[in-house]
Length: 214
Image (cartoon, rainbow, N blue to C red; front, top):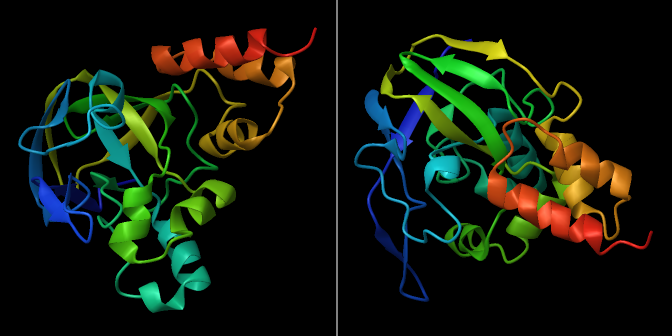
């Protein structure tokens, strides 16, 4: 596998609500990465984006094809980088990436920490009020990384899977359980026990599990 695309951007205004957003990214050939992500890349709403467990975002190229198939008018609009992601690698998708996976991207070591949760800004940017719902329902959310070793990444660098501690819990399965109205405690425990899962999400899942009937 190789890095096919890198993207970063500054804060821009999203109309018509005049909201600041970091979803607009531009392709670049090389980036410097530290524990908070790409240096110079902006995540505006720190409640939902950015921080050590959401340092880098990747979106699947296959998921773009599914979006365009469902929304033909987005052909040429829903293109790599337009979901606000930082990385494109053709072979990687929700069904092939697992929570806790450790990858080497160029000189950078990263670990998959959680799926992305799509928000209303996707709807506004692409002018489809149900697009984020479609993305969540189809479980094509993309995923986040934490950075274990800082360094530089260039387009064309190798991308190698080094460790897979949770081979049964890919992003697609994780999203499937999250989307259930009332998942079983055993399914939640499977997620909770994942090595490398973002700690705040683990706490939320533990709270949800505790609320289920015995």
